[in-house]
Amino acid sequence: MTARSIRVPAAAALAAALSIGAAACSNPGSGAAGNGTKDSAVVGIAYEPDSLSPLLGYGKDGNSKIFDGLLTFDDEMRLKPALAAELPKVGKDGRTYTYTLRQGVKFSDGKPFTSKDVVFTYMTILDKKTNNAAKTELDAIKDVKAAGDNTVVFTLKYPYAPFAERTVLPIAPEHVAGKQDVNTGAFTTKPVGTGPYVLSNWSKGEKLSFKSNPGYWGGEPKVKKFTMAIIKDDDVRATRLRTGDLDGAILPPNLAKTFKDEAGRKAYAAKSFDYRTVTLPTDNKVAGDTAVRRALDVAVDRQAMVDQILEGAGKPAYGPVPTDSPWFAKGTERKHDLNAAKKILDEAGWKPGKDGIRVKGGVRAAFPLWYLSGDKLRQDHALAYASDAKKAGVDIGTQAGTWEVIMPRMKQDAVLAGGGAPGDPDFDQYSLLQSALAGDGFNNMARYDNPAVDKALKEGRRSGEPAERKAAYDTVQRELVKNPGYTFLTHIDHLYVVDDKWTGLSTQIEPHDHGLASGPWWNVEDWTPKK
Image 1 (cartoon, rainbow, N blue to C red):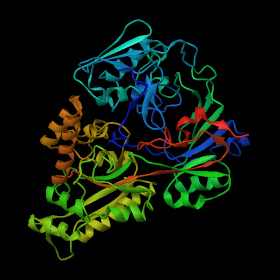
Image 2: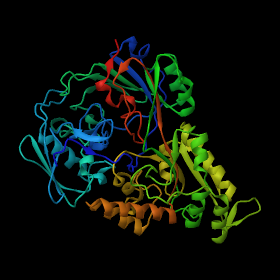
Image 3: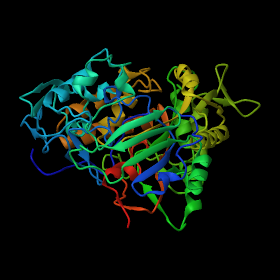
Image 4: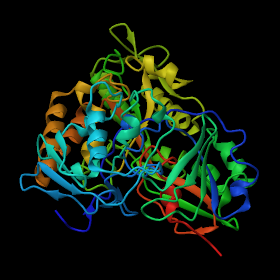
């Protein structure tokens, strides 16, 4: 395949991912944002990564400022060459992908980039010893070989239609990362890449500072210094933007609107695959009951959440696939119907007790729901969900905690979770619903187990025929109506406010993990200061 671009479906499903919270930043910049210059920028984001190594998952969906992948996405989510000189040539059987590499590219330490670095990156990720929770995303790979310094050939176990999208994954240098412990070595915090920026400092919980790479193959960026201030609290982020400590920030709808029409600033709204959902653990006697799951699925008022919590910046979610996606199975929308919810519970033997909470076989219809401390958006979703559930006779107790507190409880307790990454439906649904991944970190958090779904997921990722794949993912979505292991609530638009000092800003369709790799600064290397 040698076409100039490969179009990614404008709205497909997502790859499940959750972000780890960070401490609020007390001094994100040195003085005013960007020190008053247009060749520097300081932006406020809510979270930071655990590691900066692509071998452990950093930047796997593209947009890493330190690294490049073989391919990358443009603003319309079309694939285009990056470290590859052109788009891959695909064998007739759909099982071989041949990449010709861009010549003359160097890592930021001056060493040349070659095909050996590509082979090293992919084979290291696939190694069982590597702690990369997303390695199942590369399950289709049978082998990766270098054919000289400038050619790499991937051989797949089966035709995997979206494979080219997987090759936006950043490439690590073998001469650096290959000499360290992949899981704990210095490369995880002091990376070396081919990207437009070089990490100059990482103050954990405070900021990530970058400087432009003068040897970048695409030309040195005009924004010479770029800083991501880690500010967990939404209100603090808005305040620091208003006082000039930040040049831009991601903000929730209620705070973004306070900057509306403010001189010298510009607002950006990015469509996203980002969803909020409630995990319903299979091992919980109440949340794992199919009748309770089905009742909660129709008891929840999703549109009210969009209107009141998101202030219209989003849409109802009925699964990981957004409703405006060509992969969405029409007819799987669930209307808010409290009477229907009560009827489902009545017929299943869940009868109201004296306090209005239902009971069956001596078991009270109650379970805890955890959300991430300090995340007001998750808190608001959790409270609204619990309120709707109580009207149906299900008592859900909301509790805040860090991931260190929440993770050990995920087998039995519900969690207000988030996920989403632009791309193929396989990217999200497999890791979210495949029973074999139950309990594997943040994969399949609900421990969902449905043989029909497992079969359809396998067919969807192994078929090269669009019609067969559509049928497979339709099956998954219809099975989720019959037995929803999660209650999907909303898909969320991401809102940003940025000082109007540069040209070239735009947004992409964004993943759940927003702010860090996404936002109007997804292409900061292309920004040009206004005169």
